[in-house]
Image 1 (tube, rainbow, N blue to C red):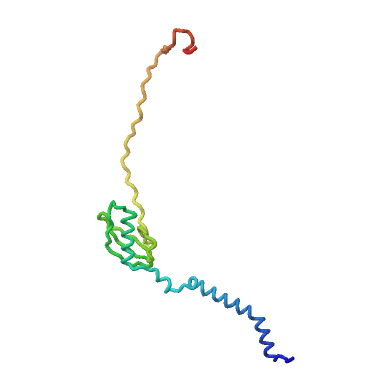
Image 2: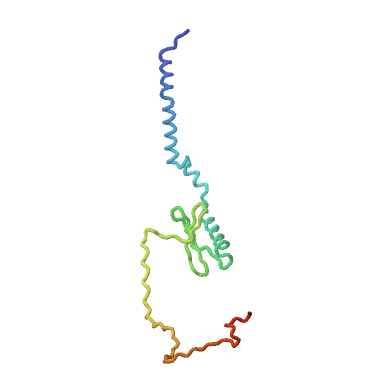
Length: 165
């Protein structure tokens, strides 16, 4: 039998002892990378589903006309621009301008947006109308007398009102 050199034996012991630690460390590093890249999705993959601003405007106008207005009126595109991660679509319906927003993938349409950086003005207090007197319902007058009048009706048969016996 030949004896293994001391270096090879030491190398095997190190592999056995630290191999699982190295594998665990590698898997942990891959987990951290996947968290920061969104599951290994890089920016190139996310931009594939972005539609152009003109296509977004056409989709939104078609959706508004067919699904929301249903032929009762017609929405006309005025302007489309990019605002952040959304498309701002200005349209006109029956002479009134509206602003709608659509996601860049064309999946969601928002009928309006609220700018949260600007304070919303407080609603105006309603002006008080002068009070109108309310009419109380009229009650019939009852005459008071010393002798009450009682009107009794009955039958002459004497059966106490039982007709069927």
